[in-house]
Image (cartoon, rainbow, N blue to C red):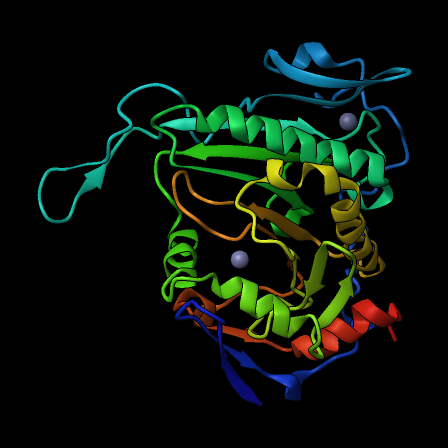
Length: 320
Ligand SMILES: [Zn+2]
Ligand SMILES: [Zn+2]
């Protein structure tokens, strides 16, 4: 058993391998709500043919038979582009603003019975293209300080609709961990993540490496089988690597197809730089195979899968 600290964050995790299990012990036995037979569900607002059930469309990418990806405002938004965006305080303890921001849904595919891990490089590349163009657009709003594209897959990861989709949220503040990563990765002048990548690409935690990207399991992973994907080049926003989206999609699909073997619920976050700040862009994939308890609520974590074993699973692909 070991205690590890995150590369940069003041965040500790107990690597509790005495409770260790094999990958197949994690296979989510629930035939979860994402598995459905039918290509079309008449009650699903995200199915092709039901466009009238969603808020007005912002954009779409067409294929031969109609739209392939489609995005619009979230019907039940967390943030909205109205009201007071400045965070005020009445006194020492009570700070607030309106929940100012932009909250969109990106439907990743027209079919109801497919998931992102069943898809291909074309589709994932196009999803990245939507993240890129919408992030750029939303960042133009003066009051938006951070744009987070993310995906929830499976009930345990917080999704409410089975039809495969992602979300993009623009906020009037920088989320705490992202702000801390930004400050700490720049504390010595040059980017700390550039150094971390150069070490991890040759470590026991490596997953795969291609010409422009490297994937690995983080040293102090807080989730079982957590994975990171970094561009090797120091970039802040997706548009700087637009010509490499197919290659980045290969990494995403490589990891998701392994998670499919476990039928794992997961979250993906695309971490880009806050406006006017400098953070090395990366993708975080967080499988949600265990339930967090009291320790996790305190801000420390327990992980029963050593990141080195998680990387072996990814490299080997066997669940035994
Ligand atoms: Zn559907
Ligand atoms: Zn960097």
